[in-house]
Amino acid sequence: MSPDSPIGVFDSGIGGLTVLKEIKARLPHENIIYFGDTARVPYGIKSGETVTRFSREISEYLVGQGVKMLVVACNTASSVALPTLRDNYPLPVIGVLMPGAYAAARATKSERVGVIGTEGTVNSGAYARLIRNIRSGTMVFAHACPLFVPLVEEGRLSGPITRLAAEEYLAPLMLEDIDTLVLGCTHYPLLKETIAGVMGPEVELIDSAFETAREVERVLDKLDMLNKSGAPGNTRYAVSDAPERFKRIGERFLGYEVPEVEKVEL
Ligand code: DGL
Image (tube, rainbow, N blue to C red):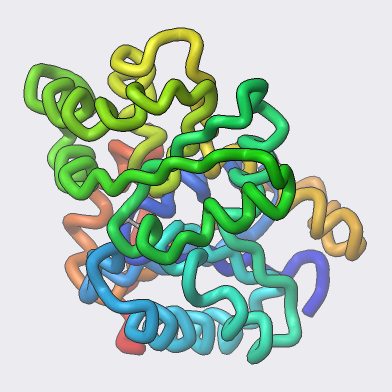
């Protein structure tokens, strides 16, 4: 492992590209391997045990590719699998929850924070635990928004259907009078405008993808493992199924072309 070794980033599918995009914007010289488990997505409705097993299998593959760091770019996997991954691999493992939790704890003035995510993330209670560990007096209200993931994958980032789903899902959080809302799922940053439109300008939205990229930089810098070559970084994309669909929808997530997507058997 050396500074020019790649960073391994993985997700249940396409959503982790929101995290990849932020890492690439922040650290343009890093080489990256992105793995999307498109054969087994969604993780959000599966048990913690199953998601942890999938996360181990993917990490095994990425570590075999010589990565210097693992980024679990999936909120559901981050909420259940991090301890197992940290116990099993002697390299830094970054999840998306901690950076988002810190940002939320810093942002809230009223100490009333909302979290939206998949059923798995919400049921794990992980965000609430982390936020309260950082700022003990904080009340955390978590709510699952299962329709948001398919809406984003269908490209419905705004419009009446998405607006209606957002109004319905967010209504209970509005009643709690929160001043900060964590977008606790990889897909939700793409719905930022719709969510902000429903919540209003008084509620600060926390984008865990952006916060995670900051954490990746901080940890690599501390370990003196940032790629200082000055050359543009290379990104490889791998999936467990349907590379064409990944490429098509992935380009919408990234806003630029995904060159080639490899299909990998784990
Ligand atoms: N990537 C997942 C997350 O951030 C959302 C999609 C899924 O359910 O697998 O929780």
